[in-house]
Image (tube, rainbow over all chains, first blue to last red; front, top):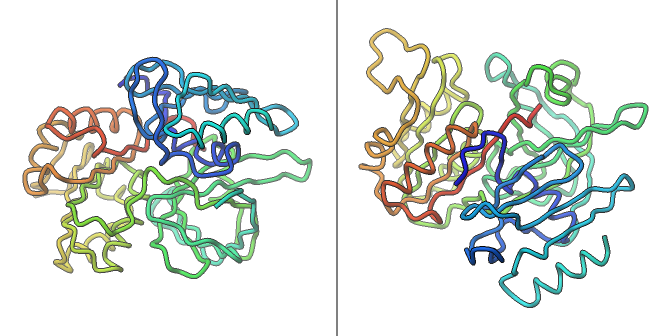
Amino acid sequence: MTDDPHTLDANAVAGMLHEIFGAEMTAQESECAHCGNRALVGTFRVYDMHGPGVVLRCSACTEITLRVVRRPDGTFLVDASETLQGGAEASADMRRSQADA
Amino acid sequence: MAGLAWEIATIAALKDERLHVKTITLDVAGWADHRPGQHVDIRLTAEDGYQAQRSYSIASAPGMNGRLELTIERVEGGEVSPFLHDEVVVGDRFEVRGPIGGYFVWDGSAPDPLLLVAGGSGIVPLMAMARHRARVGSSAPCTMLLSSRTPADIIYATELETLAASADGLRVVHTLTREQPSGWTGYSRRIDSAMLEEVLGSTGKSANVFVCGPTPLVEVAATSLVGLGLAPSQVRTERFGPSGG
């Protein structure tokens, strides 16, 4: 765990994640591509809540698991290449969302 | 549950909980009932089109037929909370979407003991859990450990007394960090590992724990609880940092 007072939990961006992926995401399990930690998305730490982009990091190794940029037209650019989803179906969903964004 | 649409909420009631803390009761037509611990996003739109969005925890228990309560602390210099405190009146409308979140949620079916740890207005989502627990008659033993600066800062103080007095397995433990009433025999320091160990002693290490409050409090509580032997997966956290307002 980090001790940075400026980080929040992924719950703080649960609405945005729901908007992007079309489903509640914080109770989904995922695997960190860096350290292999399997944990619920809700355990991710959130950085830069009010910047143009949001970065989510693994709570175990603090490496980046998800990058999201909100574009001026309201769509999102999502980089989930460092998150390994628990199931193939979720992976496909994530890729689809990236394609849509 | 697919999309997450913005819906119109109408203010049904406003109540001052204490200085700078207000409960707003909202009616939302077609509202999907929430689970205790979930939150909503609120979006305000100015006449020039400028929009501000914030997340607020739901304070009320589920089952109120499209009615929900948000307890909101006024953040000085904030964009949204001063407006909700100073400007709105019953009948006003704004946009909400939700309920949101599935991680920081306790739905009342687990029989395991429950430990709810809060600092300041971090009590709000935990109060939804305590209210739900009482409403459904859950037999899960529950301890709330609440950190407040002064007695006057305790949100829901009267209701907490009533809930604890019902002797249904709810225990409320306060720590008052800045000012204590005369004759105070409770804790008078910030939450630390020794305090959590004492509180856990009667709750048990199989407890499901929910911690909500300022980031430093959550860090100390979560780290201490894991140090006391709880699995990280037993401890769910919701930090509110300097991003509110």
